[in-house]
Amino acid sequence: MQHARFTQVQDGVLVGATQIASPNFNARPVDTEIQLIVIHNISLPPSQFGGGYIQQFFQNQLDWSVHPYFQTIEGMKVSTHLLILRTGEVIQFVNFNDRSWHAGRSSYLAQKECNDYSIGIELEGSDDLPFEPEQYQALVEVVSTLQQAYPKIQQHLAGHSDIAPNRKTDPGEHFDWQLFRNLLVKQKLSKKISSDL
Ligand SMILES: [Zn+2]
Image (cartoon, rainbow, N blue to C red; front, side, top):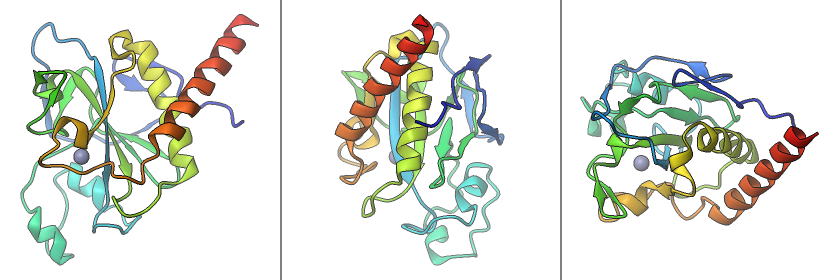
């Protein structure tokens, strides 16, 4: 297996991730601990990959005139903590200590406003296409590192559609939760073995 690249969080920054600042964040409520990871998909235009439009969108720099779809999201100010591209490259837009704007109206285990206490991870993808193996690999590395850095997360991993079921469908039926959870267990096992050596 490829050597893990994303193994450390320092002051809310994922070491090894490309850093691009989004202005779309604010402070988490006082005394709020990070306890949930929310998995999403996004592509701009929908089901088209590459092009850098997602990055521009999260920086409020997207030219709305480039594509008709962009006009339907014109002026929206949203963000995510992490974006995992089709290649497995990981981009961080918001410090984990801050509240990124990815979930919207939402609720997890009867706790509302998931943005307050979650980390958002967007996979470059769509509801109608499979994700790339590189994306699962990066995702398990990232999630296992986040679970270590923020132990309250434990097994609290949800899809956007789980926390906003009437509004959202992502990450969609092509996101393979079983594969993801199996890879995560393997990742933790290999981390444990290497730390025991
Ligand atoms: Zn979403």
